[in-house]
Length: 117
Image 1 (tube, rainbow, N blue to C red):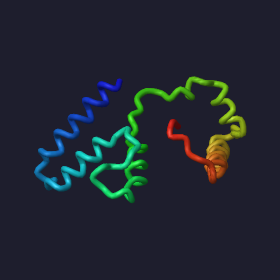
Image 2: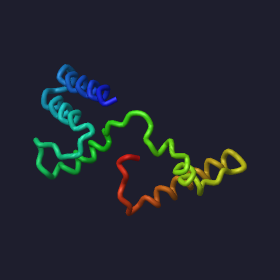
Image 3: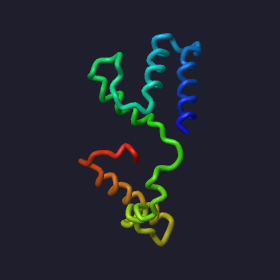
Image 4: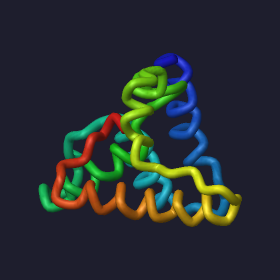
């Protein structure tokens, strides 16, 4: 899978120079960003203040193909959805699910994020 991702990344980098609507400065920055896919260090051509930006950018563009390991762990999935209550009617189930998601989001506040999820 890594070879596929590398091939896509390299093709993107090559193509950034061939767009008539993209000037050379923008194309250079686009190539730099494409090179950062899957990397967590700051970009060497920018000041250290951009470290956080590029770290976040690389998390957004992390190379993830297929299913994460936690998807196949039914115990974790059961635990995750343990507090979700299926309603007697469709509308009730949807409202319960929305409330469930809000509570899950609130639980994540003040906790470090897991880049693998």
